[in-house]
Length: 211
Image 1 (spheres, helix red, strand yellow):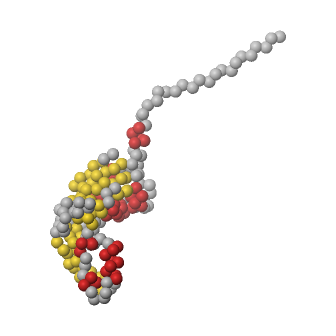
Image 2 (cartoon, one colour):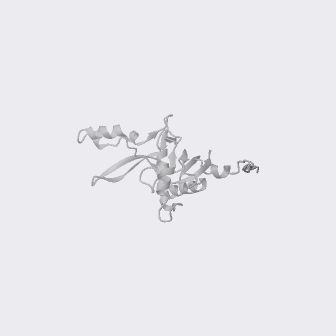
Image 3 (cartoon, one colour):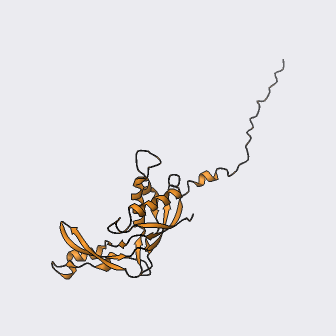
């Protein structure tokens, strides 16, 4: 009797044509940069915390001129070309606080503030305001350590403009349209600079996705 061995059938796997059909879905997860120009609809007050100026004032003799007067120049930020500038972190923080008025897309029970805080990165250290000097000095009563004092702060009239770049690291949750809306709310509800939102309110004059 002869035994015949029949080889097992070979398994053949067929592959369909490989394409880039998933590219749009993948691209939605790429971080993107935006350029934003804001225009003031209210005057802008400056009161920069300057470490050196504050330290010297603290060391000044009691009753001296240095102790009793404001160092106006130390209250403003300057761009590399010498013009007065607005820190990009001002816009980022205003945007984060405006996100309190939006719902977090991941949870119906919390605001989007923490989401924006994690996702939005400022790429503009200071934005040039196009002027080397302030428009006027604002003098008003303020309370410092329960004592009323007159504070003098440099100010820019409404109409000031500044351009910033921001990076969004979570585009799947914060698309450009949503970011634009929140920045617009930041200008209406939060503002930038000192004594906001009475001062420092703005509108978005330009919003564009760079990449």
